[in-house]
Image (cartoon, rainbow, N blue to C red; front, side, top):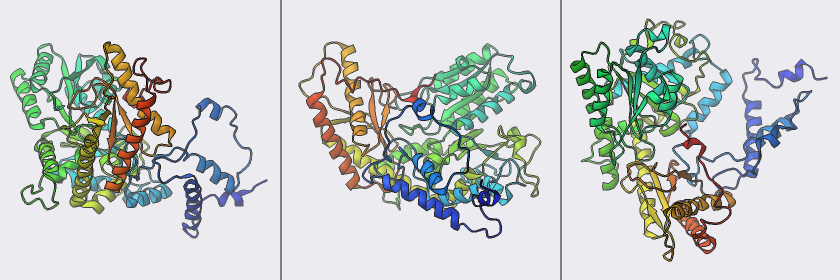
Length: 546
């Protein structure tokens, strides 16, 4: 029987504080993963499996496992892992993490702090307040009056905002629950998690009003004003107005200044005894704020005219984020940090902290008093602090401009093949939404047949890429979800996030797509809606907002 001495070998040795064994085991696992890895593919190879088959015969082991067995069971978990650092990975807005943030995450996990209180976290807890100070000061808030917290994801940033807005609109709701009519205002271009926020808070999904947007995906101010006035007239409370600080597909930023002005007009006209909370959902678009002081005239980064014009449009509205009551940002998206690193920031910290303060003596910092979580990892806060203070403003400018320039070049190159159509030609982000052009001989009479055929034709590209081991990993965008240019059929999306993107990999990407298209065009039956494989329904799990 294994004894305690064998158990001790499985832990970090407090007598030596040496990382030797930990690094040795990490390297051993990673070498096994690399043995499986095909560097021309975007994911580590994986065979299809069913979760029931995977677990049905699984039993707990009776004895301590050997190192070799432990390495084997860990290595297997990386089958199918996405290689986000590869320029061949174009799936969505998920970045390769900075090496410094990976190193910090490793050591933070080793020391295992709980950011619920600084006593079990040490100075790692200060990373949270350092980031809050740096960002709130940069956007123009009084950083001594501002506050925030790292939370469990992008959805949580808008959830926190809606909760604070609910408390402002209905002060008794904390003790008595939501007993009056209340609405949460969002837009159809904003993330569907806003609906979920309404559900979790007891406001109800049906009371989340999703406003229409213009062609550029920004909200309709006339409808916003009418919706708010109707609510006031009918004695309905407005918990919060959740607007976009940069949509994923189009990087559309709502006119923050005008939204705040309308909110203030409604308060004055109706003599409201509370102020509806204005929150900017900037989880994707927040780093573009680093261009607010960029000299587009001198143009030190030599941005192309196209990229320069895009950034000007984004910044024209985003620079007014300081007028909002709060906003949310994800470092694990456009902050190049590991999951999860989401930050909720608020202009008036007393609306969040209530009687607590953040500027206290060591040992008195207690976020558990105002956060939803009682167990708070420090990884996100530390990684964000590291990213901000290693890249700096200029580093973020360089990465964003590099990716956007590369996306523009790839967009043009795809269109020049005449085999693909770009859907979001006027998009402001580095997302490329496109569809394969139908062969010239194909004509449709029945619209239902056409939709099925077009959807299956596009889906077939993903099926073919999968069969090839995903040399490039793409995303699928459902109908009418393409951003500023509405498209009635499914489309493909390439989202460039790796700083290693270059003309060579972009050229290979186009070459692979052209080869796939040639093969599909020879076998696809447009009259019946496609091949057997393409008729397998492809439903994106993350696109289900119900």
